[in-house]
Image 1 (cartoon, helix red, strand yellow):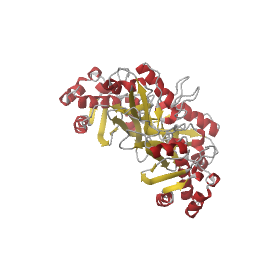
Image 2 (image 1 turned 135 degrees about the vertical axis):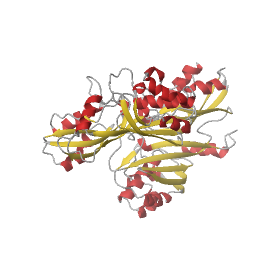
Image 3 (image 1 turned 60 degrees about the vertical axis):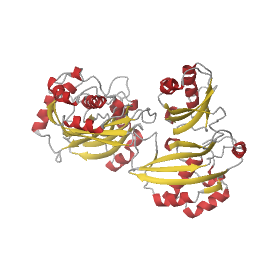
Image 4 (image 1 turned 90 degrees about the vertical axis):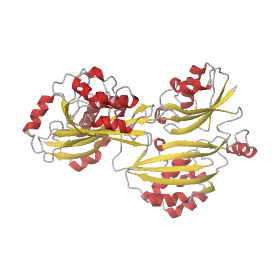
Length: 267
Length: 267
């Protein structure tokens, strides 16, 4: 029995999200279909977390175990031939049998792309969020800086999510503008359901003057989702990478406990 | 009666090319559908030329004449609401009644994007040409430079095209690399059917060692299409812009004659 860890890129446009759902085309079901076809085994994959319909990934991580006799070099070379072209296995490596993509992850990095131009773009429509009003990057960065650190982000969680522990730590939010694109990079120990998209919606609203930067601390304290009305669309969101402990030889006690407290880690 | 010139961007992925074809979804038919819906008139558009299935445009140009009473500012503001979101009217202006997007054009600029990385990319699959072998930009540029000027490009025309006058002038081919992308920009007074894609296929073959740079002059002279076997895919090609005479108040005699000699200008 071998355990393989894969880094996977996907174009979320034509998927009903990551997780298997009956009758829907999902990333997980198409990867499992391809692996089953290739390895002739009933493979189940374990990802670092789910992504919603329309959300993309540059570096999602999943692992799977297999009894296959196919040599690793052949698996590496031919895997993508068995997988739909809107999913690409960017890298694969053998890991110890205990490794689990979700339990072992220590942080995640997301990218959010805004297309900031008067007129919409057809070519970028599925890969960004179009905002026609000119945005104030400095103001957005100063607002974002108020979210850095360990905080209860209940105000930033989709209301239908039933999560109990809503404390998360954001390590950084970096905002950069290149031509008509604004890229926001988020790194944290975990993100609540829709949290990145709700933060982006808030930053855009601050830039538009709908929300004042002085309200931010109060919005966090209120733990009231209704204070933030706009969730930025899925099309602009990319799971950029998932980070792991250097030594993944066993699940650390506190990490496991932390995970059990958190329930599903969906963004 | 007014004549409007539009600059249009489109994502060619889900179109059977530009030109109207019975039973197919084409760029022209969707623009005409939107204009008819908006202006409540049977509008016919005239573009600078056709593009094939899968080919994109950043700055295709078309014009149409209309009897509408709707003020120009309203047309400009609302036009895109009537058009599918994989087509965007980037700009619109009133031009003199004689202006015709094809007859008046003096040159065209195309962009071709190569994704040069060992592993394919899902996110860029419909917007670039994936080449896994490392390409030699310097060699490609030196090869491209041999095509600059006024030449008979018969060897670079799709064989099913029936064009008689195959002389064109290429003003420049500029090749730039940024991260994993190689962008090739072509400007010329006109391009034969598939000419840009055949040139890109040749440049890649030279970089791979399939064709020697010393053969290029002979390939041009041979006027033999079978010397170049690879046409780069449509997904990497973008019509970037169409250039017009400063004073478009009348069709210049020689331009009109030149056009009639050329027949349809399809790329």
